[in-house]
Image 1 (cartoon, rainbow, N blue to C red):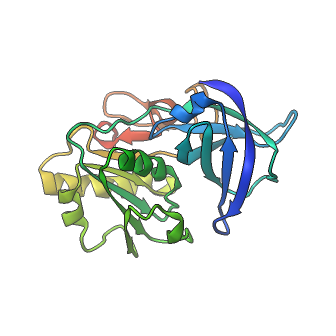
Image 2 (cartoon, helix red, strand yellow):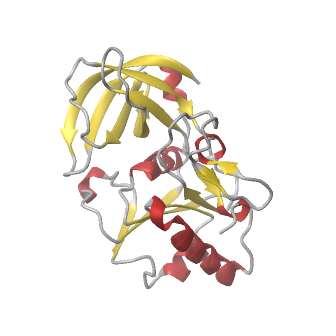
Length: 242
């Protein structure tokens, strides 16, 4: 993980809460993997504010596309200080052919690099969008099957879990305990266990330092406390105390 500079090439508005930025980056950042993120500071010069976690939704050779809140003034040509890649990557095993992504009351932004990498590997990808979000569906890759539901107890939940070889979910941080526990319980009912490497939850607390030093993103684990910014933010829920 190192600091570099990105240049904003293009800006587009996705919704009231999100803008999409196309960035020119150093080639090393093009190697960012699913589950990792960037720590960005859009302002120039010295700023007293902490960095923001940016999750890429697309990666190319020397280019990245990220989605972030419109909390800063973005203009084409403006430099952005980037630290990363941060976090632990999640790899797809040889037995993963069907990837199920679930976004509950949350934009699917933290899940999209999983989808992109899975599509690169020619995996089948389904995204369940449940709850409240104003994310535009036409901003998602057309290769993804999208299921829109009103909540996390969607009618075909059991069938989707049976279909999946791997699941990655994201929810608002205030609901991690309730939502991830419910999803884990359903997996146990369907598969008689919660196998290691099958169900991941995105713990996107405010990721302040990115190196596990401040303790702001601690998650209670079954064997030890987990640090979301370095052990995650995609944590295997079989290792989390829910």
